[in-house]
Length: 425
Image (cartoon, rainbow, N blue to C red; front, side, top):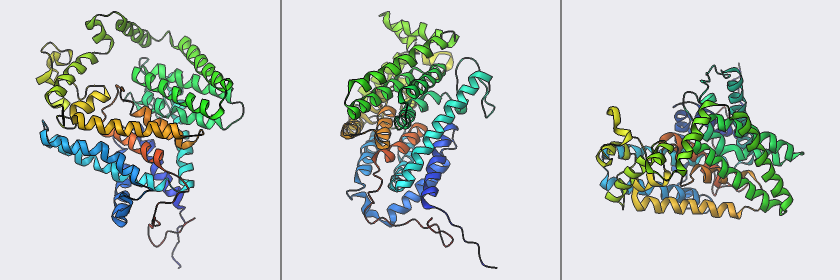
């Protein structure tokens, strides 16, 4: 009997791996498995053709990674906990290889389009699942809603708001290609804001505001008319008004508003409470930074020496606690753990992506990915650890998509062959 020949479309194959990785961001740790597969493929691609590291088509990707990773390596010279810092630094290399695979695959136009459509579907599904969880107190996966914080498919982690805030421009981009844009803008933004408010994550609210600001800029630059800009602004205002009115009854939300009022009191203790005691984290982090300002104390070192630098009455040391894992302020975390060297590298990367979005002359998928990177790596973000594996996995999926240029083939690019039974569709 003649052997069975499997016809597998290469573009679908690559898009499937990338989309599975995006989808598994909804889990606690499973995202690392497909990323490991992408890393293995990416390493093979680089070993097969090492010249891609310095060639014009791909060198920006390697420059961005080098500016983030080199300070991590340099910080090992004075790391507080060398074993932990070394593990974080060298394991971070898999983002280089996995990210390069995404970058390489995204140069295929069909793969790029499939990934964009797939991530849009994932965001829409996450929104729908969260709405179902709010209405029926349980989502499509059986995850419950406790009436305090909506977690959706990210249960038990509180990551839904951050995921939606970063990727919400993708929803608006798809709407921008349709008729009756204003109606769909209002409907989509209202739903997103409604879910975000129920997530009760102020860091996500800030990121969503940045996403809307960035997307409004893209609309302004594309349409060149105040009519479109005012329409977008009206959509945002209407969405916030509607969602705010609906969610006001939520006890957790009311408590969050009460706490936030402490910022206007001018009293340090009340401000600390209103910031969920982040002020204490920042003071301790500043002390760490001043002790090792050049190359920092090493990646993820903050958690190991918190008690040594904190005030004895610090909130995070009460009841036998040992502190926090990171300072919940991205720029400070970079400063503490990789010093001025890390800060310089990060700011150069951020300025590079700012330049890239200002260069965009139309609303495009590429512009949306660039905006997502800028929001996810906004210097004043107060959410997950910058050097932590989860947020790094998310961002290193976004960066290669932001840098890729579909239809511009990589120099000396070779086909990816899975074996004898593989043929291009």
